[in-house]
Length: 470
Image 1 (cartoon, rainbow, N blue to C red):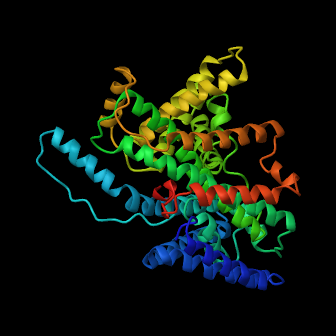
Image 2: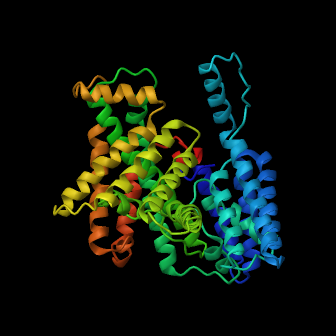
Image 3: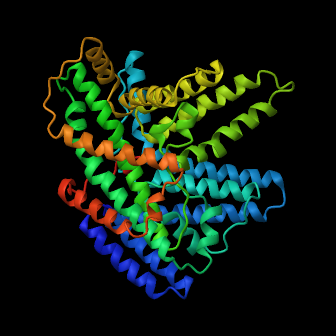
């Protein structure tokens, strides 16, 4: 069940009406949401409900034990047990076959005729996202940033909250639980903001992302005879496909949550208008970037500083922590060396930018364009199926800009991309992602125009969102 389907629309209407019926009792609202979560997840594969319930119960219990232990050594032990169990679940389902395949390749290179068997493993929906949410919760309890949740029911509801379950945003327990334990009544402005985010997110997904996908899939299909111009077009349209797909999902998820009375932080903040690598990562997939900063980069840097008696070479320690963090970021996205290369690419440029202290007196548009080109290059590594495809595509670009493939609808999609970026320029100028809500009379016409675009140019094939695969 995906957001861009008629089935989800029916599901959402039923859940919303039931939720509104219980608006004077937040506990009943939570029960409605829990039933919705179970139905939503079961529609994909009911067998994995046991996994998410196990994950929730295990993390709930570990957090309780950490909170009750008075001895620091025992607290650390329970934290390590929790991290081991969480990472083991993620490792088995997401990385086991990747590990086995690389072991087999290594043994073959060394001359051993051994082939370890891979397993037919299905990646559970949302496991990468709810595992990070669970880890952040237990760590926050360990550092006494928050008290453990007193209800396992509420914790399961938090991990399985259906708007965020498929592809985030990664919501922190410390932000979510206070809202879960109080009366939630959405205001008129909440409904309008929620509707705008749903319509705008759906527009990005079915009009921009899914139309871009036709061109991108054609260029990146295995053994496609592509020229340098095809590669440039494929990368350019993938740049907007992945943004419109993922930001579209995030906007819809945040909009749905807002209609239910939850205030959730933005996950994207005009990333393609960034002026440098740091600025980009402050704007792109903010919930993951901040998670990696707080639970990977900061602990790595802190432990590195503690391990040194004289605390010399601070910059080197910072850069090594950045490198490891981006390596983990790449691996988190998928069990493929191309994702790891993508992470290394971004980490290297972030380090290089900071090290050189680049202070080039350029106009902002030139800085933004330069950063946009850099981002496009990185998406080639992200989208390519293998190193060999990356190599062949780079050679194609180096040998000329010929176009061998037919790209239908390219100019129509370019117009929609222009609309997207024009709106974002206005959002940046006004410093308000919801500025349209200020036009109370005209916003209904804007909703109508968006719906017309969606019905006229949208691709309604219930195409999965890209990040559901991560």
